[in-house]
Amino acid sequence: MEGSRSAAMVLLLTFVCTILCVCKNVAAELPRFEHPARGGGGSVAFLVVGDWGRKGHYNQSLVSHQMGKIAEDLDIDFVVSTGDNFYDNGLHGEDDPNFLDSFSNVYTSRSLHKQWYSVLGNHDYRGNAVAQLSSYLRKIDSRWLCLRSFVVNTEIAELFFVDTTPMVEEYFTNPGDHTYDWRGVLPVKSYVANLLQDVETALKESKAKWRIVIGHHAIRSISHHGDTRELVDQLLPILRANGVDLYINGHDHCLQQISDNQSPIQFLTSGGGSKAWRGEMDKSNVGVVKFFYDGQGFMSVTLDSSDVEVVFYDVSGRALHRWTMSKFLLSSLM
Ligand SMILES: *[C@@H]1O[C@H](CO)[C@@H](O)[C@H](O)[C@H]1NC(C)=O
Image (tube, rainbow, N blue to C red):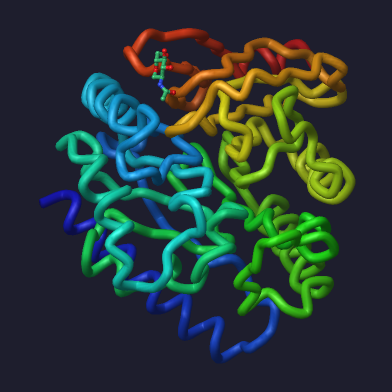
């Protein structure tokens, strides 16, 4: 009941946002969704999974099963997907059976029947990216909400979802055998400039205690793909200047935590939703590596007005790494 009510609310808000964007026909404000934490807004809990849609294979089903258990324990409010939602090449269209095979029929636990907030990854852009944004998918599975960039406000925390794929120049200059669905992001220079401006504005206006930014690509990573130069150059300065606490991404199929060397920002990778074990690691990273796991798994985030706790889990549900931070402690130190 609660799920269907929040789904209806999301639909209504999407409709209103779409009307506003169409009428303005310019770089609009990021669409916003209100998702007040249950129980009076005292705390928020959510899971993060990335790089997952493989029809249950490559341990996707095991990860899903453990997500269901942890979601129940933590009584989560929602799930965040860091993109690469459907392999290998996104969805072909709104009716692609891969949507059911890799999403609805995999994440079946009752505790995962909450709102999902998703961004697109580079693999999603290799298919029909627009189909993943379609409200038609919400008729098939009301949990689904994927937009390019948007804000979710939980009152104590605001989550800023950023469409990072169009920022990566290589996909345009050196696409190799891949074709990308760039409908809606061209000309890319002004798309990215507007996006960065919108993110900066939204962060500056934020009154939330916790500011969490989510994108598909890593800012810092010691795994296969490494740092994303465009994000280090263009996005990171905005995050540092606007009190961002966490930057969460997928793209590299691993779990990791790296602390920024110039701000309190934690870079958290949760990209272990299915295929993993790449066996690559580059230790020459800028920042302090607090945790790295090359295999499959997912992450939980719980927050209240003073504390955040981040936990990484493997396919057996074992907590591999736990990190907590208190805002009060931090502000009294600074
Ligand atoms: C599934 O997870 C187990 C435990 O981490 C691992 O040993 C196995 O290689 C994984 N399977 C695949 C296909 O990655």
